[in-house]
Image (cartoon, rainbow over all chains, first blue to last red; front, side, top):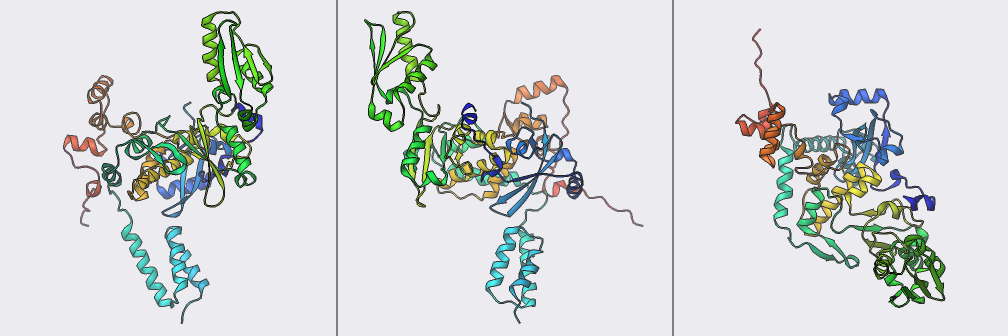
Length: 88
Length: 381
């Protein structure tokens, strides 16, 4: 950590090849997605608010993040995660 | 009359199919001349084939995955260590490595990093070497000879000029670093460093000597070795024994978009849960492929999905997924039966009997496949 500050370099998680695209959804989109799957928001997979990728897009607790992965099987795979408070 | 490429693309791209199938389909169709009628038939059959290969609702996908990974697992080597041809770095392979991955160990037994370099460093051997010295932890032993003078109560270090030059360290810089770390004055003359304990006592002198050997003088603590290797693309890549992703990413010249480690938990902490999931899949596939086993990636993806569903990388097993099941009976059936039953007995837990395991135990039909379908007859009107 100390080292990082010393060199003045900042690591941007979203630029790394292993991190897929993340984006925060607005209210209407969330409702549409939940209705499409016929589930409650709490049933979505989770992501911590302290997660580097979630923090990079400034997601807050309760937001839903759309993740667009490059999947080896489907090509493009869309995934959703709800932001929860980190236990730490 | 055959259709133009544009019309093919337009029709195919609107189909309810995954992107990859769509692109394959349109690429193949563009190569062969098809008429409208043929195109329609191709599409109809593709849709039918896709529908046919989809996993049906209520299928026990988890059990299929478990068996598909478990069976090849029986053929894996039990031998832990292997020098993976790449850059003679020792890595855990085979079954022990696979266990390590699904257990989501915080500290894998052989952490290893693959450090890619930025363009101006990647094709220049000297610059790559310079970076390697910046990363590899340097201790006093590799810089010179240390001797203890018992009559004078002093530790004398005869530095090796060549080693210093190679690592680009100045004598004064080194003396300052040791002073800072050990909190004692260090005097330097030429390439000789002398230091002694505050109070002259044998015990302190010996302790000082021990401490001196553990001080990281240059590089990152925890990176034991760095190997430089030229890839087929002509680019130099660093492989390290030991892993400190966060610190390495902070070094100028390191490619922040490709550098990786084989420590899944470290990736999760530095890059987030999605990268952690990707790392789990990558590591598991690599481990299986290295042993010459082919497991469909979908099974590994399912495992990785379950491990990462709650926002952090959880292990499969007592302390992770299986230990958090809602049903008491399911947990008791897995491991430490008595304590689970006792604890929930005291707490007065209720088992809803929703899962598979608990229903097998009580002798009810399980809610999978046709067992998950309830039929209600309609009243004749």
